[in-house]
Amino acid sequence: MADSRMKKLAKLLVDYSVKVKPGDWVYISAEKVAEPFVNLVLEEVLKAGGNPTVQLGSDMLRETIMNFSDDTQLSWVSPVQKLVIEQADVMINISASSNTRTLAAVDPKKQQIMGKANSEISKIYMNRSADGSLRWVITQFPCNALAQEADMSLRDFEDFVYGATFADQDDPIAKWTEISDEHEKMIAWLDGKKEVKVKSKHADLTLSIDGRKFINSAGTNNMPSGEIFTSPVEDSVNGWIYFTYPAITGGREVEGIRLEFENGKVVKASAEKNEDYLMKMLDMDEGSRTLGEFAIGTNYGIQKFTKSILFDEKIGGSIHLAIGAGFPEAGSKNVSAVHWDMICDMKTDSEILVDGELFYKNGKFVV
Image 1 (spheres, helix red, strand yellow):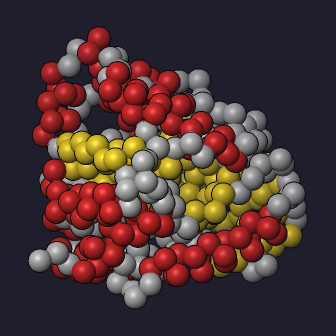
Image 2 (cartoon, one colour):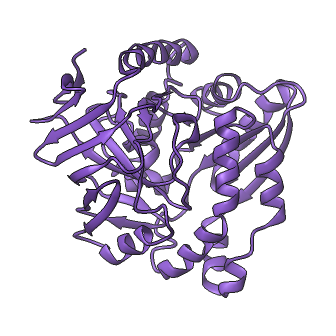
C-alpha cells in the first residue's frame, strides 16, 4: 500500500504546482525506479482531466547513450523531445536514481556537445515558461541511491522529503500558500531597487537588479521550494565568491569553487576537486560565463546538505548563484545551454545590502 504522504505529494503536484486542467497535454518524465510514485501522479492527472504521456528513463540507458554515441549522434536533437517542449501544456519531471555516479566517468566534452545541441529547445522551454504557456514542476522520489547520497537511511530520507514538501501535513497547499505570501512581502520591498552587495567571509560581490524582477518560488516549479530569485543585469556583476557546498551536476561533484567576476563575466575560476569539469562548463558557449541567477534560500525546514540541488539550493540561510542561462520572466537576456546552481552558506558573518540598506544578515531577512 502506498505511503499516504506519497499520495498527498502526487495530488500537490497536479492540483497546486501545475494546476492540471481538462484537456491539458501533460508530459510526465521520470526514472523507472520511481514508477510507484509515477503511477500515483498519473492517477491524479487523469482525475483532473489531463491527457498524459509518460516517459520512463534510467541511469543505465543514459550511460549507454553517452558511451556509444559519436559526436554526430550527440548533436542530434530528438524531434519527439522538440515537439514536447513546443506543444505540451504541462511537464512533470520526477527525478530519482539507481546510481547517482553513473555518468561520473563520461568525457565532459560529450556532455558539452549534447548541451550545445539542446540549447535551442532549452531557449524555447525558458521562453514558454516565462510567458506561462508551459507549466512545469520538478520533484524527487525518495529512493535508496538518493538516500545514500544524503547519508540517510531510506526511511529517514522519506521523512526528510515529505517534510520538506509538507506532504506530511494535513493541508500542504495551505502551507505553500502561506510561504508564497511571505515571499511576496520581500519581493514587494525589493521592487524598484537597483544594487545588491553581498558581504561575507565567503564573498564580496556587487550586482545590479535595476529593472529586474524577483520571482516567488513557492512550490510551483520546484517541489520542494523556498527561494526568491532574479537574474542580475548581465554586465553588472563584480567581485568574488567562494561556494561553501559542493556543486553537483552531470554526475560530477565539484568542490571548493571560487569565481571572480569583472563586468558580468567570470574572469577567473578555480575548484579544489574536478576543476577541469568546471572550466569546460564555463567554456560551453558565449553565455556560460555570465551570471544567470541570484537567489536567496528561504526553506528553514531544509538544513541538511543532501547533494541534491532541488533541496540544497533552498536551504534557509544560504544564497545560490547560477552561471549561464537567465530567466526571461525576470528580465534576463542571457542565453546559454548551461544553468548550474552553486550554493554559499550565509549563516555567520554575512550580510546583503540593497541600495545601501541592510536587507539580510546572518541567514535571516531583517526588513
